[in-house]
Length: 264
Image 1 (cartoon, rainbow, N blue to C red):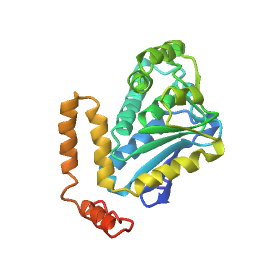
Image 2: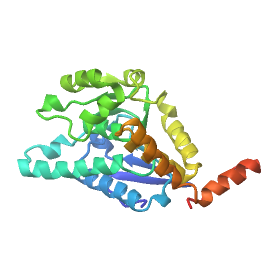
Image 3: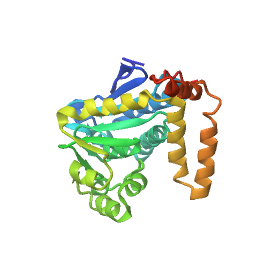
Image 4: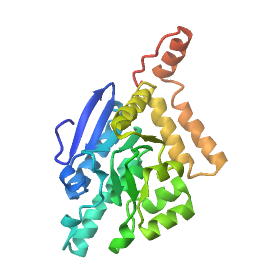
């Protein structure tokens, strides 16, 4: 897939680890229709061939922004129908991101506003530079979050704090996001990408079917009551029993060596 996109940069880091960069730094990586289409195509491609990927890190080009949200210059003067057609692309893209079978780590290098904040929240977890800032500013523009913000933010930080953030549109710091549990790790800007890639590499070294099934179980199990979730977990667990990777993991442990997982 390298070199395929106009608004994204995709770099193979080896061993199934990929770096995905939102690449419109001249406009703070704002998401236009083309970027929405390309993100949708990328994550649909991962879902269609998950064995080619073991972990993905997503970041923004430059130091200014991860993603400033939707490209409002492109949207200026759009008809209602054109706006809704564009937003449908963004909706499909977010579903593809959230349902991506492979773990996706957000490395937030700068401002993550509006749709950019929603993309970050759609990833499995977030590392952020100490200088990063977040906001869901849609109500200040006559709209509201429409790419999962009203659902993912309260799940991350609680209903009352999410209401304050969304209803005021007020920005908040990476430090606040970390203290509230939205951000997993707060890092010096120079260390952000290295740390995110190191964590992704650690994930990529693990048995890929196990990683995908565990992610699947967490994501869907949280929408169930506890006992139903536990039954769902066992169905996911049983997928690993007949795999070569399960046998390799046990052999490697007993032979005191690093396992070599094949995703089979």
